[in-house]
Amino acid sequence: MKGEERPETTRPLFDFVPPTPESQREIANRKEEAKRVVKRLAAIIEDHRQSAIPLDIKLGSTEIAAVVGALREHARSGTGTPIPGARDEVHGYVLNRLFDELVEEPSNILFTTKTGPDTMRYDAMSTEFWLECLDYMEATFCPPEDA
Image 1 (tube, one colour):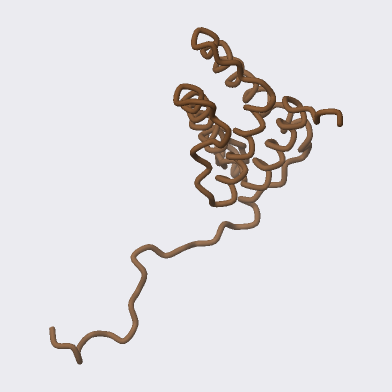
Image 2 (cartoon, rainbow, N blue to C red; image 1 turned 180 degrees about the vertical axis):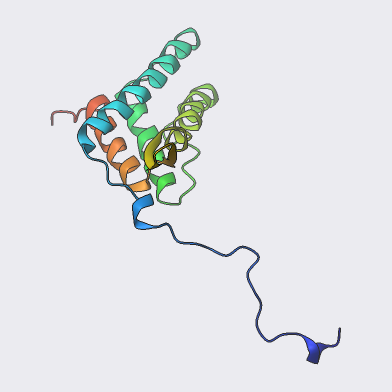
């Protein structure tokens, strides 16, 4: 094909179809949903706390706050890792493993929308709601220190 025979415009490989308003379903009771999500996250954190005990690593509020900060950064299109504040290689590994497990949760927690008499659509958690859940998680696990 000669240069002058090429079309002036190119068509994208995939056409982006913006989500319809009904696919961005509003969560009826955001606070209760956030509590449900944070309860699930708390179980994951507790598993990691127990796994860290034989390594002589305590996952306290400072470590959880660092992981939550990294999760926020990731949600806002940052990398999120490595988690700041690691004391050594093993401590850093524990923090990053917790991050790795928690960062997958927004895509694992699905909300259902009835689309017909016998059909349901499953939507992943929105970034805005994930950030709300992270705020609630931080308030729950990382109380502010008295000055």
